[in-house]
Length: 188
View 1 (tube, one colour):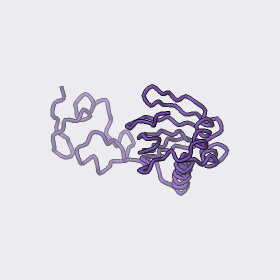
View 2 (view 1 turned 90 degrees about the horizontal axis):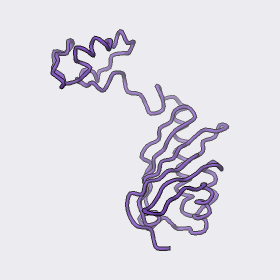
View 3 (view 1 turned 90 degrees about the vertical axis):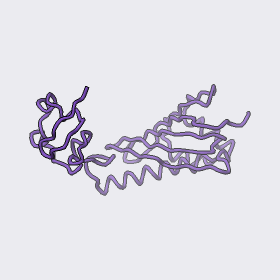
View 4 (view 1 turned 30 degrees about the vertical axis):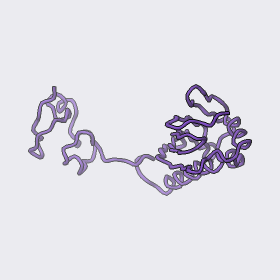
């Protein structure tokens, strides 16, 4: 059980385990750990031991911003291509990419080239209320993940997880894993 402890610098009480006597002995204060104090620590939060960083590393640089823009454009290529434009799909996905997921009993474990052939053969899979929103992009160096939320695609709603990689100076989608979050696909 956590017991309230007195914070030496603010005189406030906290349920934070870092404030407990045992952990204060084991975890050195910010100065000893060479971490810069952060104003958020004054909010009595045990979750912030160092200043927050961006999802693309310790500092935001022009290159980081360009990488985010490049990956956002890559996901947009997928969105546009998945409604029947195979050329955009081939621009977005690495040739060795795969797709994984399932809708009910229908499992998908296939090379992305099979999905590209499907969207070319059946253009217009995006329904009249189709919407695609990029929820997050998280990049570190030459690797990352993008999350896309789609509604009314193939009669269903999905959350797509794209693994992305910079290969030979160019960003590619190397894997798509999706979760079916609602709706029923049309009968074959």
